[in-house]
Length: 138
Image: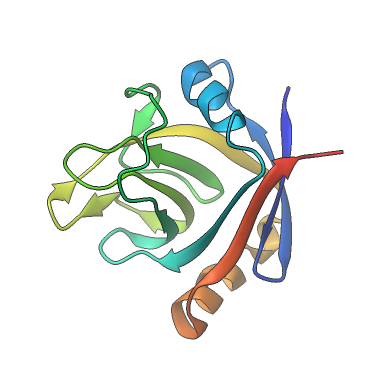
């Protein structure tokens, strides 16, 4: 099992890659580590934060995709109708954009720090964009 460390705002989370369910997505994401971005609060989806990535191309198609990630699940939308993005659910989410409902590849799940997930989401909503960093756990 591949384990990642995620630092988002003042919080740290551990996560596991869902290599059996989304092997191509996990492989593509690993090539970009350490992955550094900003999270902003979602606009249409509900209780989540996202990383807008424009036309970034991970070279993946849909696998293990969902429109309803559970809290602590991380999905990647490979682009198409909307821009490429990564979304982290902290509560109820129906993944969508201005173009309507979307689905993204569930490729990572938080395994620790879940008690801080809602605080991160609310901080991002009320205080604005937060730094986020994904790296291999030591």
